[in-house]
Image 1 (cartoon, rainbow, N blue to C red):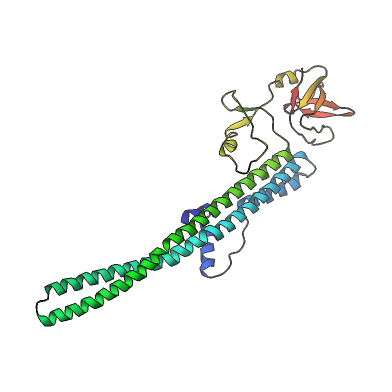
Image 2: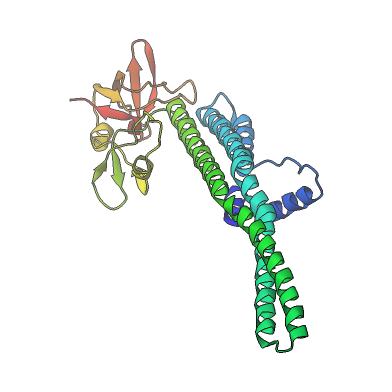
Amino acid sequence: MKQTEVLLQPNPNARIEEFVYEKLDRKAPSRVNNPELLGQYMIDAGTEFGPGTAYGSALIKCGETQKRIGSADRELIQTSALNFLTPLRNFIEGDYKTIAKERKLLQNKRLDLDAAKTRLKKAKAAETRNSSEQELRITQSEFDRQAEITRLLLEGISSTHAHHLRCLNDFVEAQMTYYAQCYQYMLDLQKQLGSFPSNYLCNNNQTSVTPVPSVLPNVVGSSAMASTSGLVMSSPPNLNDLKECSGSRKARVLYDYDAANSTELSLLADEVITVFSVVGMDSDWLMGERGSQKGKVPITYLELLN
């Protein structure tokens, strides 16, 4: 129970504050979570940088997605607290304490019964035996009554287990929904920013790795999420050819690009444009041409066609 609370609210000060408000039977103040805070900072920075610029627009899109993740995180906490933590806490602090108390009382009654039996065995005088037998009958009656109370309480444990199993399933389902939502949000953001190049290379070798699939099934597989771990985006294999390009050549656009100003040309993934070099231009750029439109394009977004 405690570790679930830590998972849902890692901040110990916030947990203490919520505990105090709960004991005072008051509602804890709503606080902004970390993804929501990051999202707001990104939106503010993007607005200051300029929504009309590629970087400013991307920051705003990322910020909006972070805030959506923050809302999903808040929903996970509320759902898990209601459907999993609260029933578990109520049992531990309520029924379980009652059962433990009655079991301890039964143990004491058993000790009293054993003591009464011992005294009866040791009684020799008739008067003492009568008194011991009377004490034994009373003690036996009290033990039997307490044993019945404890038995009834313990018989309810099986239904309690079934209830907590349903609560556990609700918790797992809430987590599954949360992670699926987060993945879908990031997938949508990736599409807004432009699809990544088709080739990924590891840091220390040239082994190509299949990119994350763009379709999310009902259950998110961990292998798909882990496949991009420790990878960096590499330049296209024909980068040197592009830099040495003399004359016009055809090139396929690898992923979307929003022009930062009027001197650049916006690109759409998979389209084919004409590119050529211009004397004095930065080596990372080429001049691109699409019909009557012309502007600078980044080399890393292109694949030279033979």
